[in-house]
Length: 269
Image 1 (spheres, rainbow, N blue to C red):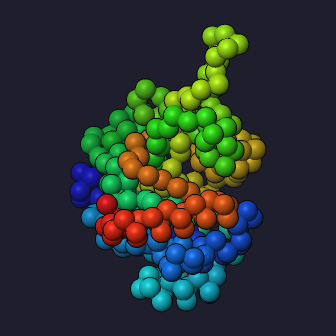
Image 2: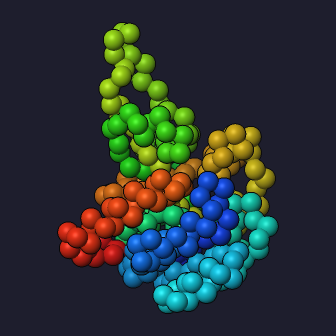
Image 3: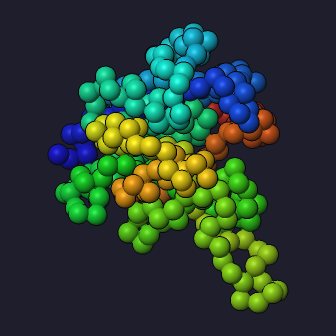
């Protein structure tokens, strides 16, 4: 089956409680809820049959209804956003489920289509093409601040596009050739908070027990690698900003103000 023949749904997990930035999903200093910014970026994406929001909060359901989004209640007991997405996926018919984080307001149609293309082509033994069960994105960066920031997740990727590891630590570490080197920028890959899975694998993933590295790094995608599955990595385009703290949200608000002053842009471009 070609990529264009496989159906896809986007599910946005949205939990009201957040350890580092409580109630960030409903932050509204731009005039729109944060979750609304994300929804508007993906709602009209080609090849996506529908966009749903999975939440544990009636308040979020009501907020989403105010701007036309469909939100569904899920269990408050889920350990992760993926588990929340999987609960909805049990009752969906689409072949591929795309998990867009509710705090990634710069996700674009291009990002989603890049992910879906990783499921195209003939199946291969190393989990490529139609054999892909899970995919995500990474963006090229060259700065020292983000590289050493534990809130920014780094991806280590093989030459053929397979995830080798994800970490909050600065990896892969570039050892300086001498004591005078090493203070400048380094090339690295930032993991972007968007995933796609076959529906069958998503349900399998949600049934796996949390693993040692997952608990240590607090990165649920490590559960996939530790269980021997392959994650394909696509190249993200444009600007990306995951909002985990109030400081990051403040920067987003300032960026949105500059965008409005500079003229309107299309939501999904």
